[in-house]
Image (tube, rainbow, N blue to C red; front, top):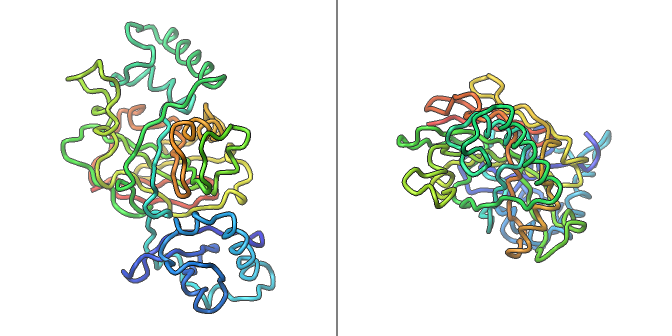
Length: 340
């Protein structure tokens, strides 16, 4: 492990109150433990909150890096095994508690959108109405993606923070949803207030990255009773316990290139999504620029940056009770989520 590399998480130890923790390899060290040992000098009393850390991220990060250097390396000054517990013994909660905003960026992976336009009968509004020839549909899709990459605005909508669950908690599938679908995505976590920030400065507001699975009820997105109204993201996205988040929050300084990460989702051990973040159409800096032009971004806000190809609608396979999803993104840990 590179010296001073660490992740953050929120965990439950033996069913007790949530605690913010430093994660070093397979060891989880509650920040409260470090504070009691006199090893963590942070002006905070609530060690159950990661958002509190993010509220002062510019001053908190160097403190955590210095502490991590004492816990890692060939001759660590402190013993992480003595201070922490195995990761397998804790329950991982969403890594950011009560984010003020959770934004989702739709139609933001080139191959994903092309696949939806070619194969999903529930998709509307992407230029496919009245077009049946596959070659022409592909040409339209590719042209749309080229235009968006060159200068288009992100297509953004809101997810309720209360829909977020831990990376290993169960996803609830309402019985009246016919086509529940997975969407594994790279999540951006904001670490500074940002209002009307330009793209060239936007990455300075990114505190780190995590995994999010932005589940969708496909048949609910475009309502047949009100087709002229467009997408209904309240009905299509925001049911209770529908977005596994985490397990880790990895600081941005440890992610060398956010556009060189492998996103992979397995359904019952079958690979469904396997794509690189390099296929992202509108990149993170422009997403932050756009969102901050609408509302001031706050520390702890989450941006789900879009889902790559390989969703259930592509295969004609949708989630059902008893299914298990396993999701990974390079360097960000692993989700394992059962459906109930």
